[in-house]
Amino acid sequence: MESVQIVDVESPPEYAESPNQQPGAIEYGDNKSLDSGVENNLDNLTEATLSEDDDYDNGSSDKENSVPEPENDNKITDALRTLKLSGHVGFDSLPDQLVNKSVLSGFIFNILCIGETGLGKSTLMDSLFNTSFESTPSPHSLPSVKLKAHTYELQENNVKLKLTIVDTVGYGDQINKEDSFKSIVDYIDNQFEAYLQEELKIKRSLSTYHDNRIHVCLYFICPTGHGLKSLDLVCMKKLDSKVNIIPIIAKADTISKSELQKFKTNIMTELSSNGVHIYEFPTDDETMSDVNAAMNQHVPFAVVGSTEFVKVANKMMRSRQYPWGTVQVENESHCDFVKLREMLIRTNMEDMREKTHCKHYELYRKKRLEEMGFSDVDSENKPMSFQQSYENKRSSHLAELQKKEDEMRQMFVVRVKEKENELKDSEKELHSKFDKLKKDHADEKKRLEDAKKKLEDDMMEFTKRKQQMTAMSGSHTLTLGKNKKK
Ligand SMILES: Nc1nc2c(ncn2[C@@H]2O[C@H](COP(=O)(O)OP(=O)(O)OP(=O)(O)O)[C@@H](O)[C@H]2O)c(=O)[nH]1
Ligand SMILES: [Mg+2]
Image 1 (spheres, rainbow, N blue to C red):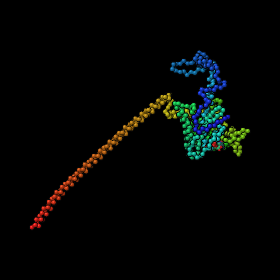
Image 2 (cartoon, protein in one colour):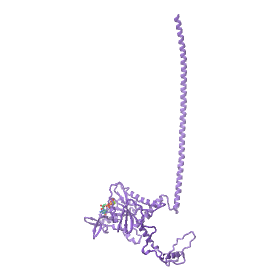
Image 3 (cartoon, helix red, strand yellow):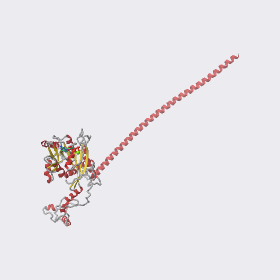
Image 4 (cartoon, rainbow, N blue to C red):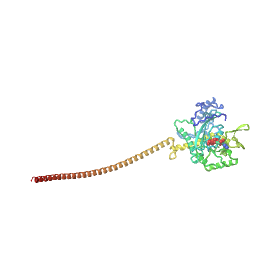
């Protein structure tokens, strides 16, 4: 790496286009400049395409060259004609155009490091990119796993790379490790979701969008020498359909050579018996198939990282010094660091980017769109366009709404009837109460009137008696007076 420029960006910014980039400006390689004969050649090509009688491909049969007669005007034939150009046209510069365009816009690569606290994640990242990302050690006391992303801008020659390193802070530190993988799964899904939302926008800007989808997950295995922990298996199983996993044995200098081979075999057996699919370096490209196939046999890579340099044969080498000797990080007989760097950065970076987009993101996108109710086929398994799918979804949604509305209306009518009956009952009750009160009142009134009449009668009787008494006492007094005079 010649020059490394690091810009630490805590939260990834919008990915700006290169200031030098001009729309449509394409640099052609020296040997691929457009020559003056292009116009003539284009004319030739047009003629060649139009004229059916000429034999343009001597090596191909008549059947290949002949254009089948269309059965009717609406039917498009699948037949392809292979034509030979009679001169240089220029489209052989397409690969160069592609390279130039990619170099101008820069590359993005996102690494997720999963591993227990203090397992050497940050040291390995420094060693891999031969720089210092200046990370801080994590505490062991976090109640849950947190993911922290840091974005750096690196430049090597004229190639710019936006590298995001995502760290799992506090992984494996909790007593209950059941949910340790959950925040990691959520993080990966959130990046897919953000990309999907950008893709679904009417006015989308994918060319300038800062893609945060994880391209590779380096899973740091504890160098126990035995096998995988259950947390390792559970986490990798949850992630294997979402991200390219490369398992690595951390701090491999702590295991002896013979133990290491057995440890690697144990790990691979455990992974396959639990159905965990890890990333395999592609063997379909002939130029790389041998190397990649050989490297697949070395997984999980046993790596050593270091930030210290020791002078070995007049050269400063990344090493770890011990009382009994020195472990050189880049020495292939000491560890697999060089193999990992070769596979991860120099050979298969683009394949991982592509697999992330074409395999893992595609799976997520399919699942999400199906959840939203979209499908490529109808109920009879016949192909269906996006618009048809949307219209079907819309009509089923409207039908569902209508059904809900009807149900609510019916429920409303039933409730109104219930309330009406309730009101009628309480009205009846009130009426009967009123009647009873009225009757009670009438009875009371009658009773009082009777009492009053009786009282009046008694009063009359009393008055009459009183008068009688008064009259009687008057005549008695008169009789007494007459007797005195005598
Ligand atoms: N023996 C040995 N020690 C290592 C190796 N890599 C890192 N270390 C040491 O392990 C300790 C932790 O290293 P870090 O790189 O900070 O580990 P980490 O996983 O980033 O730690 P956290 O971010 O705190 O979780 C440091 O003292 C490193 O020097 C290695 O390959 N072998
Ligand atoms: Mg760290």
